Image (cartoon, rainbow over all chains, first blue to last red; front, side, top):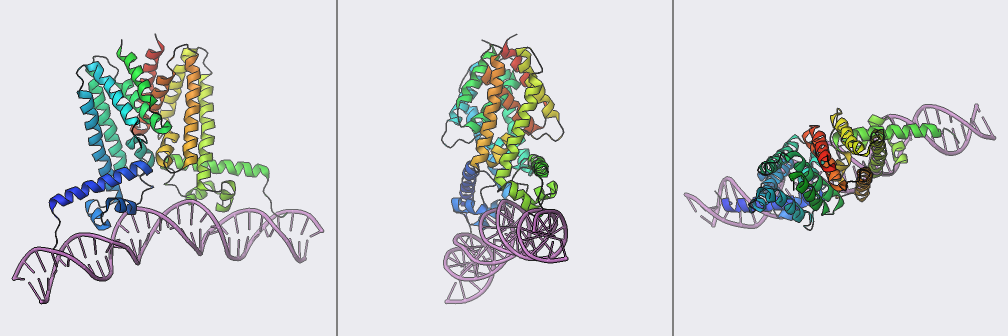
Length: 187
Length: 187
DNA sequence: AGCGATGGAGAACGCTCGTTCTCAACTTGA
DNA sequence: TCAAGTTGAGAACGAGCGTTCTCCATCGCT
């Protein structure tokens, strides 16, 4: 064996690749970003990229999957740092407010991916549904801990806030949704 | 002048073109549908299509604009056939339920277009924002007639229902949002 | 030192897209 | 009837895509 690549280097490069692809896809849309731009941004040769992921579609799914893990971990960490069940549910919307206000925020990556590839890519559609179901179930668990059966409307308010903030560029929907959730949870 | 086309024929063909484009764009996504497929479905020569709309982007904007007019007219007709203000607001969600249950429903065309072209087409982005603002303002007027200051959460519930029904394919979010609106409007 | 396999850089391929062009057929006014 | 100009059908073009291939430098091993 001649000039191998260490297992550790492989892992680092794979993360760089996912970093570059995620940033580009989120900022410009998936279909608008060619594999050449991913190569340029990641610094990896095309050959290596296609050894990690056999097709662009595989790369897209991997990006969404990693983003899902990180997104829900970040949300969970924020929410579960609060003790009281009712406050926990409200903390979801505080976290959303922070997300919406981040520079470069362009809406929910999964809603956007659904709009772009939902009709044409079965694996991407499955990944989007999986993410939304996971978020729904997590949120429903937090809501149910308050003893108030309002999981569905709270979820719809969160989704409405995401899509509206994404389109308008205004983070205000997070606070508006939060206020409505306070009412639904009872005073 | 040799072989002209009547003004009336022009109008009919233009509508056929918009019909074909709207159906295809909505079903398969905008970027996934080439101008050749629009030509085939509309039966119009490419030359004529480009005389109506100089670019595909112009066609997309025209499709969204006509759909916006029809969509809001249909909603308004349904809602304003009801007299009582509170019932009017609830009628919005009945209308949404009917829409979500239509065969071929694939979510909100504007949310989808935003996901596809929001980052890359300024005219499409403007059209999406214009539609959402118009819907918001109309809905807010209906809500404000009830004397209850809950226009924003009602709008977010509607948006959340649209995006969730679009991704899941399940029309249930309309009824869930309706139930929450009943609570917000007071019993 | 030399062999052989591997990696990187990017050219190349096949395809599809949006858009434009060619050209024969046709309609109409003189 | 004839000339003129518009129309329709589709070929053609240039660009960009995802993906694969070529080629050379590089390294480990005997």
